[in-house]
Amino acid sequence: MTSIRLWLAAALLALTSAVQAQGAAVLLDIEGGIGPVTADFIERGLASAEAEGAELVILRLDTPGGLDTSMRSIIKAILNSPVPVASFVAPRGARAASAGTYILYASHIAAMAPGTNLGAATPVNLIDDGGGMPKPPGQPDQDAAQEGEQAAAEPGDAKQRKAVNDAVAYIRSLAQLRGRNADWAEQAVREAASLAAEEALEREVIDLVAANLTELMQALDGYEFEIQGETRTLATRDMQIETIEPDWRTRLLAVIADPNIAYILILLGFYGLLLEFYNPGFIVPGVVGAISLILALFALQVLPVNYAGLGLIILGIIFMSAEAFVPSFGALGIGGLIAFVIGSIMLIDTDAPGYGISPALIATVSVTSAAFFIFVLGMVVKARERPVVSGQEQMIGALGTAREDFSDRGWVHVHGENWRARAVRPVRQGQRIRVTGMDELLLEIEPIEEE
Image 1 (tube, rainbow, N blue to C red):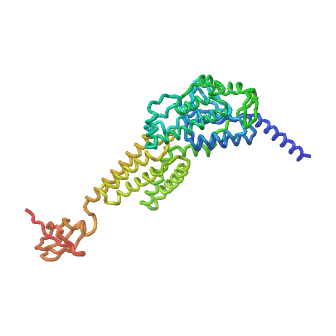
Image 2 (cartoon, rainbow, N blue to C red):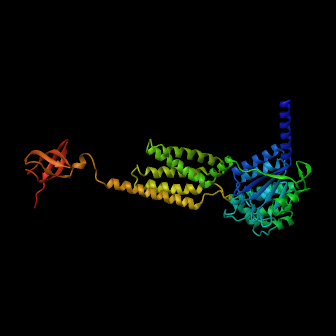
Image 3 (cartoon, rainbow, N blue to C red):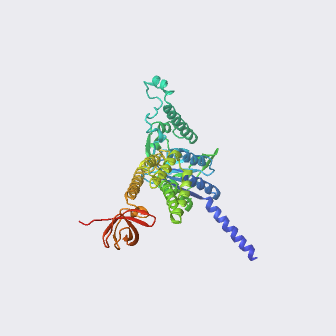
């Protein structure tokens, strides 16, 4: 009887939890640049919401944009989610620029808080490409014939048109799927157009404006929408909101996948291993270098890396390190520094917001490396100019005193030690002598005449 009661209690508890989960909304935050870590977090969050039977997923957006591949992964997850997704640009002052605009268009429900904006969805690598922005439809083009003749000769222009037309087709398909303003979506891509929340509502770019989550939930109560071919109605008046926070794995990956952190990890890895190589048995540099390099390699798997830039960084580090051991008179060091700086600039192959290496960081590391190179070069030069401090060469030219009178062979005192010596002229006891040669352990000397 006791076991049956326990079973019934457990079943009742499970049923209660399931009912609570089914009546809940899940909140996921997207802040900052959109990258692989963000995409992974959103995909897992949507899967979790589906598994728990949530009725709504809210994506709270505040992003300048991000990587195209990560944006498309998020949109694909939204389009295939059986749980409706409401993207909400909030709080006041937030934005859904570039990739954020695409995500907003892809969502089942699009909302914004007052004082927010969206747009500027042009592929970022086209803005500073030197060829100017592609012209929007209907704009007078007096040079169309001339441009047509030059298109085949200018592959850069063709590449721009291809990329921007692909982006236009993508965002228009999202707009048509959700019944939103497709013409303005095209302007956001071709002209980098932007809209404030109220204007976006007037132009049917979004579905509603709400000041906060409470107003959003009130506005969504009774809201009808279509999902996977079915029309549904939301009942959100008493719906609880459960926030899914990034777990330790997501937080760690977000730190490691930051381009600046990845850059530092690469340098720590290679410098640590080189220091361990030149000082075997020190252990600490090798351990730190190995861990840093493994973490850096992971970051490089999720970042848009230019491997030519990475190769130049490695080559630069090797050249600067070799300067201390190879007599190149600065050629290796200077060449290594140049390769290092160029590789650092080339390393991250994207212009997406938040995914470039800070120029200040590159300058700081380059100046530090240059200072280290100059220090090492100075030490090498001093070492080459310093007299030899051991061996036969040390004795040549050394001064000492005679321990006794002798005309051929006798004892002298040089460098704090007594030596057998052979003199070319007679030497008096206590007279200063100079070493002119050495035959095994026999010194050849000459007396120094005192004036």
